[in-house]
Length: 553
Image (cartoon, rainbow, N blue to C red; front, side, top):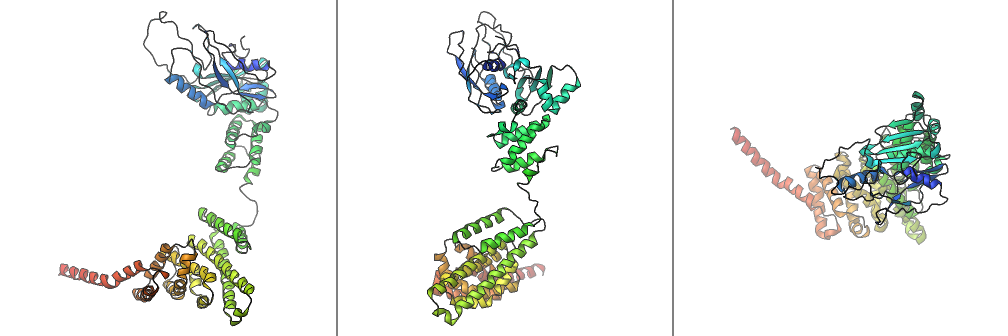
């Protein structure tokens, strides 16, 4: 029987299929046999079910794929079109399998959008040259789809929707529904009366446009969005705004405010809601997820985080949070918008507290009566030394990574008393102090810190010897200890000094290296540079000077 919406046979349009479903009490699989006796071809048509009626909408990507396949693989006999994917609709429901019915006669006035007409017999029409059809974006029958909403027999309006790649969708709708929910359609309908058809050209997202119109028939739009992907809801939001569909816009915003955002979804959501032309939709709850109204500056919050981490009593939790905060600081430069000075003050304040605590602990552990204390009392002091040294090393890493370790290098170089007491503490408890020294040498050697010549000289004079004393332990007791990087940093720091100072330090190192070998830093590369500067360059410069004088004479 013909469809009341578009006057095609029920096997020629999806409106008829949907209308037929209204007469069924259950979702069952329909099977139509073919007249030529061949096995029937089955295709899947996604059906969306709402309390207000039935409607269907295929994916635009499948329509484009269907066009490509039909253009490239034209068959001499009529066949079934490619299967339609399970496109997302207002509500995901089980897919209904439908068999396509074809006729042997070629004289049918209209064909289904995805069917091909059987060709005539060979003797009916003589052979003719093949002519490539000119594609028509609006009237390509291979891509015409008819969609019905609500009670189709009461519909009084057709909306012709033209998308890309020749996709054309005819929507059988109701004027009162569209006018009540959409300012776009209300404006169209008010311009002339009576209006039987509205055309929408160059639609960017046909599938979502059809789905958004279907949402106008739903009493609870937000409920229909549940379990939809965030990306799809953003597409619906964009179309809803273009149609002036406030109920749908608010439902999309409420949905986005409630669901988690994963990965890149956060940036996509913020970009979409910031592009809303109307500010009366109340997007502030969404923006509050990423922006705070608190008056406390970020530096205060950062100082509180640093304090919590440094005072943590759990070793594992402290290590994991130090690693996390350090990674976040490296990934995201928070020292912007004038907050750099306040952040530096925060870190250096913590550094001074650690140094003061370390000095006091070293003094306690160096007193003669300390050896008479119980093992438990000693262990408490040694544990606190390890904790404060680890905290200072973490702060040095942060400052060096942000090229802000100049002042810390100067402060550390001035800790002569701490360096003298260093040898009185067992190496297993003091070795992290040498790790701080090594990190500052690496910072100077890489140019991350630019202290004065006097500071560099003092840093080497005060802390190089304690570092060499702990070097053997560092190589075997610290899994993260990178010998090559540290030796390069020490050598480059030495080479920044005047040549006479280089000679003094490297000759002292040479005497120790010849005694203990790998138990102290290997500074051979720095030694080679100093050697060339001392013995080769003067001779080369003298030759160059003599050559220049002879050239000008």
